[in-house]
Amino acid sequence: MGTETPKPFLTVGKRMVLEHTVRAFLPIPGLKQIVVVTKGGWLDLVRTWRDWVPEEVEWTVVAGGRERADSVEQGLAAVHKKLNLIAIHDAVRPFISQESVSACLDRAAETGAAILAIPVRDTIKRVDVDRKVIVETPDRAYLWQAQTPQIFERRILEEAYRVRDRMSGGTDDASLVEALGQEVSIVEGEARNFKLTWPVERLLAERLLEERLK
Image (cartoon, rainbow, N blue to C red; front, top):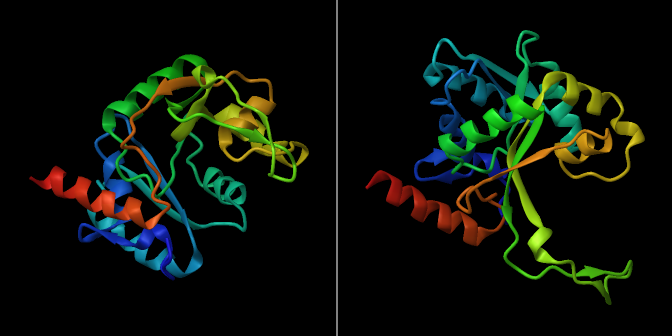
């Protein structure tokens, strides 16, 4: 994003991106706990958000690890033992809708594992190891772009993280669960559930927030 401030703590529409993201989950029926995993220097700030989180929702803030998977593992350890379905969501996807989360929760409750994703609209090329020559053009009819939340039964997610050191590759939690041999269901998400990565996406986020407040 070209800033020293971590992306979750950039201000968009007078609030930090992470705050928008947390607030998007508060209306979800049956929500019992929110665990925020963040860098050590931001822990105290995020803990103060307890003031506007509903009292019936348990509010937990923990320090993350070196890699994304390490941070998820830290968060997983902090989830209350009585809870069965766990949704993992990127802090910088602030435009997730209640409808999408609910649909993904319903599917995960049925199958044990479900993620939001959208069909790929661009042609995708697979290249060689030197990244210089195209070796394949996969049929995009079968390609979907993964989003979050990714939702799993607790037992499945815990098993995936117990054996993750023996798994190769994998850039999301669904990849680890797939490596167990567990089927992961796809629920079609929305294009507006994008991940803030580039400066132009911050501008888009500002515009979407302006429209939301009209």
